Length: 171
Image (cartoon, rainbow, N blue to C red; front, side):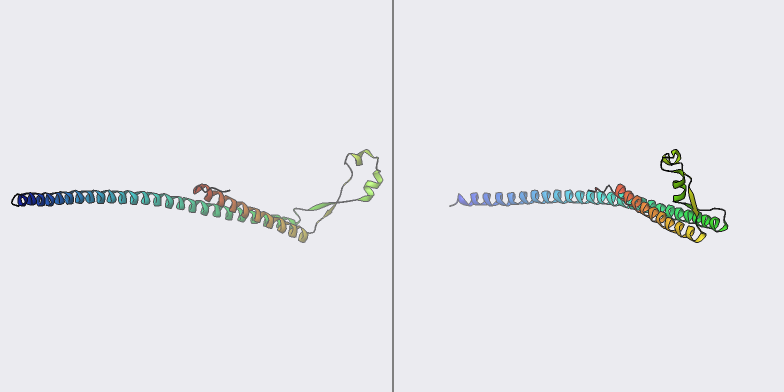
């Protein structure tokens, strides 16, 4: 039994030394994993900050472009209203006269169906002048349609701007 004691002591010392060495390796592995995690976390934070900065830059640019488009629409609407107001004033003052063609049966009948002017479309055209109120009403209808078209075009431009800015895929 005396030979087993030194052997047991050696085995015990070897186990303690192995356990200590394994602990050091484990601690070194954990420290390396912590360094890698810290590096990955820093890299991810940097990538996130860069992506956020890119998106904020895109948002600012898109916002500025949309504001510019809205200003342009306002200018277009103001210019169109000024032109309509000027036109209506000219109609009321008699500077501009509006008329529409009116079918005239007696001109076509006198020329006859075989008359070359009627066949060629060169018949005498009778016109009826519109009064100022009717002209203003027709101009208001046309102006409303033009305004709606301008607004719709501005919406389409805004949609395209946002789609192109953020590279959105549409179906």
